[in-house]
Length: 295
Ligand code: OGA
Ligand code: MN
Image (tube, helix red, strand yellow):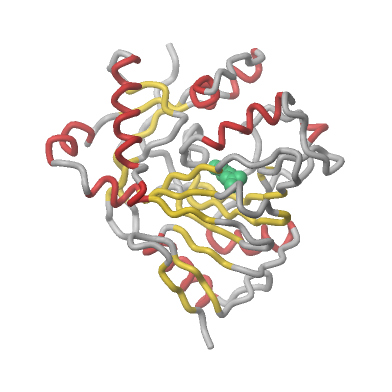
């Protein structure tokens, strides 16, 4: 029996069965999964006990791996995983939960805000693939919101108003929202804001979506408070329960999502428990808008 996909939410999200993705895929299998991504934007797989190497190999079916550098405040020497994987766990190198006030943990709490991965990079991410190696049950869900449906439901006036807007995204903005505002000079450079279109069009399906993210700090040409109030309203619209799927994790689930069509966030969990989540990220193929060098 081949791959089967069962839709889990009225708008998006497919649960895939009939395939072992820890093993090399045929071209046809990879194409079927890619087509599933275009349609469902989020795919859920169960019982995929990946090693890091297998997860990287599987991810490569969908493009170039985006290296996990320049996206956190963890020193190189404290890194737990290879740079092919983003460490989305709450753990230090000794596999122990980080202290409540550890700077790395406080920074990573930004993942509780709705975002699209790497929207703070000039070339934002295409897919993210998150493997639950050790999960928290009944808490620490990951929620996804369908930015295509959220766009479709806007009135014509709003669609016209936002069509050509450009936003500035930075990790400094998303972390600042939570009161994390102390950055070293090197971090400030690393997290220099980038520009992104607010409305983007999917290259395969042609569907438009809202490119929202907590990393947004302003809209080019707008006063910052007006931009933030406007983005806050749009985000409130786009994350209404009708657009949201909540994933309760089972060990060895692999969830992959299209950052061009969705936002996501993790919900809070007991930080004394181990939550070992490892993400591979597929780089986007280009910027959404031309970057402008700071004056
Ligand atoms: C991510 C992320 C969600 C989670 O992996 O990009 O935002 O559930 N994490 O940890
Ligand atoms: Mn994320």
